[in-house]
Length: 368
Image 1 (tube, rainbow, N blue to C red):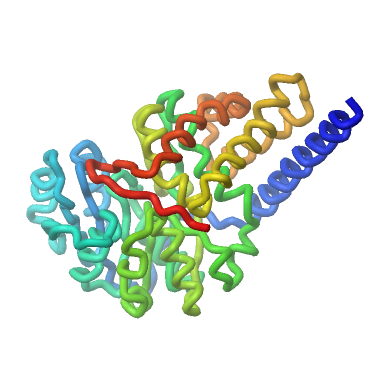
Image 2 (image 1 turned 90 degrees about the vertical axis):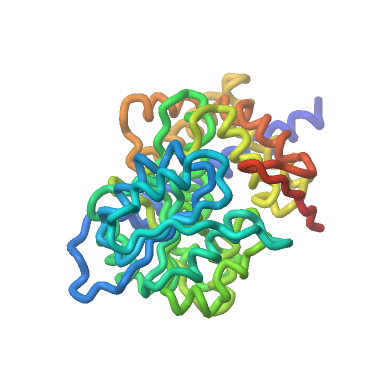
């Protein structure tokens, strides 16, 4: 008993300190983290290539591609990455008759390349714009989004602008996991620190990455991250390491994404990158899950209402910052104590030595 009591006090102190740090970071980011805003066109706007890597996206393209085609970009290129569904046909039909819109057929993936970096590399090589905007096929742009992106890129002076679209969730299975993307972004590092020119303080989101053409090709395009699971974060870090500037932004009302359609899809999607997120260390992964269980679930099970309440407040502040304030979004906050339990299958799947994503098999690389 004499040993357990100090351990219990240390656990409560550490949990409280962790939650207060995250709440403090959220307070800073509530003020300092930029949100994309509707803007008038730039007086002398650069030419723009909107680039869409697409593999088995027949369910998304009818909803998202027409919005991209209406933005007024110089060109919109869609690359069909060996899809097994109607992606190519749908993209070709939607692009037909639209000036600057083209469907490209992806070439076989060379050894050592992951699927998305290779698809993006081909798009980057084919693009002619002064600004290259890579956007996923499930990202939904509102009218005027391109003007806002160009205005933000100009204002930031960055070589890369990367944007986190607003999470759209419709089922409770999605709500258990998908919003964790925003929590990690907004509660771990304050925006002023992320802006510092240190590669280790980097963040990137492959759902939307807007590059200045010269900066992109100076780095060798996506060859820089050809074998990376977290190619977006690695690209941002690589750019910073070579003296480039990275700007971050939330999509606000102008950009949204529905990443997964159900809980099973969310588990598979997050498991794909979880190993890399934890530095390639299974020990760190195990410690991460245990810690989050101890901070968010255990206090709820034991009736520790201060810690439980702070965890709920964290999730609420994330939703408020990202604009996810519909009644169902706010009720979602109550899922916080069970989220570590819902994430356990993600960790178990992420523990495996190999994984499959969109029909392709990959091996995970452990790091010392």
